[in-house]
Each structure stands twice: as C-alpha cells, then as structure tokens.
Image (cartoon, rainbow, N blue to C red; front, top):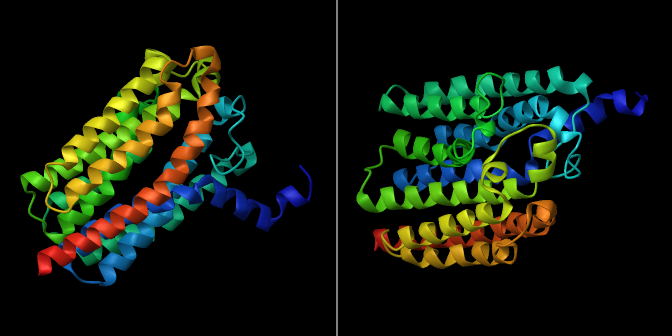
Length: 300
C-alpha cells in the first residue's frame, strides 16, 4: 500500500465514505421531524439524537455492511464512491472501531436525556440497533433473506422516526399509524429497487436478496406497487398529509422504465437508482414544507 493510502487523512476519508454521507439525512431527519413536530421544542435531546442518527448510526450501519460485504463488493462496479466504500481489508477494524466509539457516547447521552419514560422507547431503540447489526453480520445476515432484507432495511429508516415519536410522548392515532405504514412501505420499495442493480454481483458472490429471489423485473414491479400503496396510505393521514400522496409518483416514474428489465441487464437499473437518490432530496424538501404546513394548521 502506498504512503498516500496509509496516511491519516486517507483513512479518515475512507471511514467517512463508508458512512454514506448522501444518506445521513435519511435517518436524522425522521427522528428530528418526529420529535420537533410532537414536542414543539428544540432541546438537548433533539440535538444529541439528531447528531446520533446523522453520523454514528450511519457509520455503524454502513460500516458494518462494507466490512462484511467486502468479497461481493469487489465484484460490484458501483462500489468505491458515494454509493458505498470499497474498504481495504486493513481498514475493516478501523471502521468498526470508529462506528462503536462514535456511537457509544452519543447513545449513552441520548438515553440519559430521554430517561426511562416511556419504557417502550428503549425497546424501539434496541430494535433499531439490532436491525443495523442483523442486516450484515454473519450468523444473522438478514440482507441475505429475501423480503426480510427489505423489511430490515426499511426498519433502519423508520425506527428513528418511531423512536422520536416515542420519547416525545406522541399519541399513535390511526392517521399517524397510516403515515408510518406508508413510510415503511416506501422504505421496503426503495430497498427492493436498489437491490435490482446488484443482481449479477450478488449471484456471483452467492448472496441472496429480494431481487435475486424474485428476479429483476418482478422486483421492480413490487417496488412500484409498494410506492403506490404508500401513496394511497397517505390519503388517510391528517391534512395536509394527503398531499404527500403525489410524492410517490416520481419514484414510480423513475422505476417504470425497468419494469420488464431482464436479469442479464439488471445493472442498467443503476441509472434509475441514481435518479432515486436525487429524488430523495426533492422529496425531503417537499415533506419539510408539508410538515411546516401541518404545524401551522394545528396551531391555528
């Protein structure tokens, strides 16, 4: 390994890359939004929880994934950039240690600030962290259990929101449950669509996934159905929540060209996946606007 590739700066960049900076907002925003909308305040728990779900949580989740997926990532042309680090084996311990060392103090402080009420909030956080580990580690490897892989992946993103609601003392009304169910279906659909582009490298590495089990075309159709159902569920939420139903359409349109994609061309779905990543930023902005409108309507 060259001197440049052993420098502290290079190692730090690789560790940072393994946390998928483009995806940080996808876990921090659900927690922060759920907490602020419920409590109406900005406090220490909000700050600490948001920081935890912004960086350490993602470093744990994606770092563990990159370490235990190294062999398959070698065969995956997507790896080595914003869509996932191709970690040198010499960095595996560094990344794992960085995840634990950044997460542990933030997690302890967050639990201290949240207290023991309600007690089931601890269960939610425990389930969230279990899903982070279970997705990738040998012996569990939920990512290799078709359908359970998409369920676990969605849990990664929905559980921070549920935890935020729990520690904020939210009342779980039918409308709120519909919103969370829509979010969960969106997450499952997104994971399924993301798995399509990796059918070839996953099969070469002997890795099962929802896409290797159902095939590329059927998995894309399942994703489209999931996004469609998520949009319909938003119609059952409190105003102006139903307006968010239309936000499912861009995702459906992004995946639509690949609804009949053959397995031997599954990698071409990467173009749709890259569009999906940018759609998340637009959708996040529009969801923020709807949340502001919802708070305004509730306060009027």
